[in-house]
Length: 165
Image 1 (cartoon, rainbow, N blue to C red):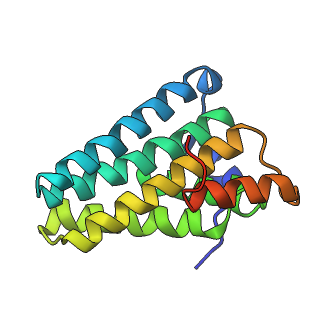
Image 2 (cartoon, rainbow, N blue to C red):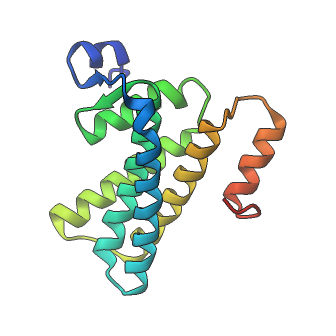
């Protein structure tokens, strides 16, 4: 498979410039947090499909906030995932797990929406992935830099639930 080329994606208009992105990225983060809360709430009501889908959208909106901060926007969900990998994961700003969780959550969402295949385990997995995505996105927005041991400890503690937002 050919490696994703962000410049080619821009030329083919799969990723497009969005100069106002940084101004609205906080709105995307609010939406991500709301979606995460909603996913947990509907899981408690045993609405498994809705929890799966809503948790995915929490990841989507957190990822979109990252892309907006780079002054781009996506034309599709998978292009967003590829752009995040190119701009953040491949640059060492976010762990590979972020991208892997995004793609798996997208797959679980599509299975739930289009094939009516979903499970409580999948919904719980998407919720956990959404929690991590939001925390990592917030850490990146606060200036998380690869190699900063204090920040690594902070992010590690956030992910392990030792620190509340």
